[in-house]
Image (cartoon, rainbow, N blue to C red; front, side, top):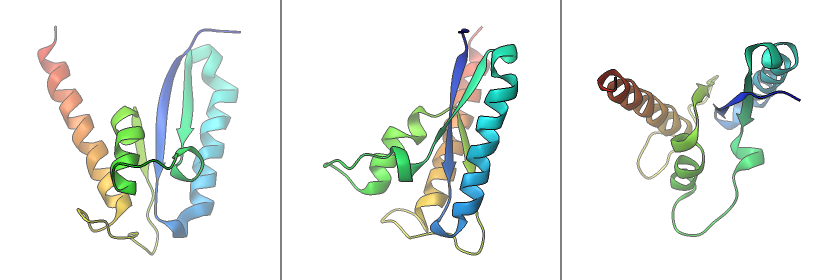
Length: 116
């Protein structure tokens, strides 16, 4: 057993990239196997297909944003031939996820630069 900082890694992509999502998840697990103990960092993959839980009170994208994007440390967005399914607020759910992750990172960099 060892202590580690866990980074939640959101893997976001439209439905035509399942093999690529699987490859990214395998790579994260491979990194954990070979480096987690030494670096004291664990990479925890989060995928909407396996981690999202249906709930009432908003659109699917709103729920994914609150459960995943807003609490993740890293967003990996994968695109191939499709952009994804349009949502009420964006050209696709994956595009919305990537943009929100980018906005969160920009906010964290902005706040972090003011904190001494």
